[in-house]
Length: 156
Image 1: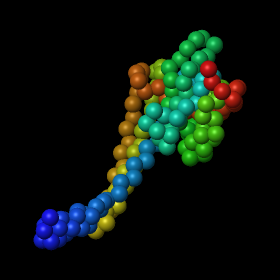
Image 2: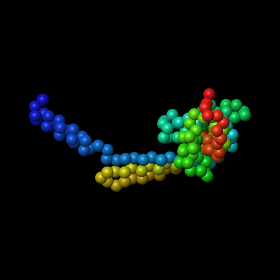
Image 3: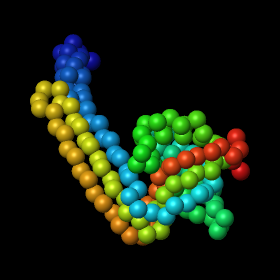
């Protein structure tokens, strides 16, 4: 490789490094169960499939009537989502009894999303969206956690 080719390659690499990330996007979603059936279920707390930082699910769910779907666990209207996530993190892998409102039957949920994009050399952008879903919500089984109690330190 000649000096000129090497100098051109180094210049190209420096230019590519200078054009690295110029924007940072932060998305926060809040899900509220507005209606739903009051339930008392047992199951195993696990990290959500999309990653530990994205929430928790209740798996192997059952109640006195039989098995139920797996639920995404969300904060009750009276509780802080951050506090619930801290509490649930302590119980991953534990068998729990959870009381709250479930959406696997006729229900209404609200989803509020805030997206904030910070731009290095420009105006920051912020968007807010709010949507409501009603009725039988297949594939969207949520459980707003009113209370929980550990039944066993491990799950089957």
